[in-house]
Length: 489
Image (cartoon, rainbow, N blue to C red; front, side, top):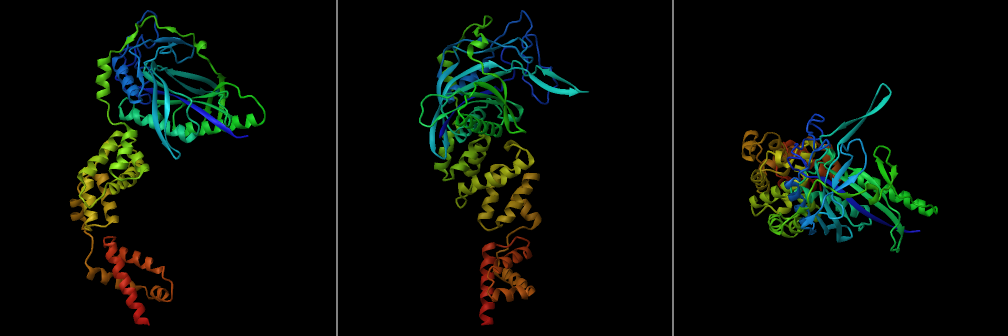
């Protein structure tokens, strides 16, 4: 039987505020900071303390909600979500339930099947839990709790079950991450757990309108884990239905090493958490002038910028998508284009960024902000390559040196004598030298092995120290080979 997959995502994003959601404790790096050093009686859940809402967290939440075309609630309520877990010091989590900050939005995505919108059910504020580290020593297993993260502001973004493929889910997740980074409300560092995905997955017979039994996969902090776990569950549920079995509603974990999901507990419903209004917090009132002020300050969003880049600069949609994933990269690209001469296209600039620059950044684990080559300097390098002052190979070598040590193309070219050799007399002499030094290869070429022309070309470029003009080399080589063939005849 054919099945249709139905996927909804819950995304938890830590907000990049200076202090926690309900207290003045600083938000610290979850990996580098010493454990339990950013904790106070409020976030540790001591009796008698009172929470106070972080205004900046609310502002960040409004930015995201507006970017997702949500309807803002001018009055929202915090509630207590009651459950026990060792890293939840109060024994409950302050969250929003019946009356969230915003509802009914959308996020546009692009896949191979085209553009579509995924509906957003709700965007609400809450606090994060602490973090458990599981360890063992001398055969004894134990867990260590770190409360630095407890109380950090979280924004939960819940989609409707509108996605039907892993590709759509990935496009939604990466698109949402790009928005969070563009709005500067979240770093996007998933390896640090600042964005965590929870996928709700079910399958149903193709053509059916009734939703199947769903499972939820918790705490996925990479696109790879999200995709692999979802694909695995689709296969598991489809196989179960083929066998006539019933899919059980449950909460699952993901074992990345084994590539399988595992059961954690039966799936909770809202009543299991015994929600009730938080008695220590008044209603959160958001006035329209503040909403208007935040809306007016929103930057161009990644999806719109991607469309504009592809249209305005005539670049491939895939390259445009890469360029807009991070705000700083998009700005670098536009500054580079603005500095280019007329004979260098924006498409060439995009190729350099998505090719040479991105490869170097990935290899050296640096961000665009740490790159030593400013856009006008790279534009100067591309202009010199376009004018045939240097060839492409030399330009890439100069770029690599600038990325490591800084400097300008003019300085490096002058210091290392890298000006391209375009003099036809000099190139002709190099060509003849290579042909004279390789009589057997020349004889094989004249005997019909014409692919040797490319080998001769490489030898001439090597003899010229990779500084010869490739077009001039090709022309002089073909002229010399034709002369040799004519002389033989």
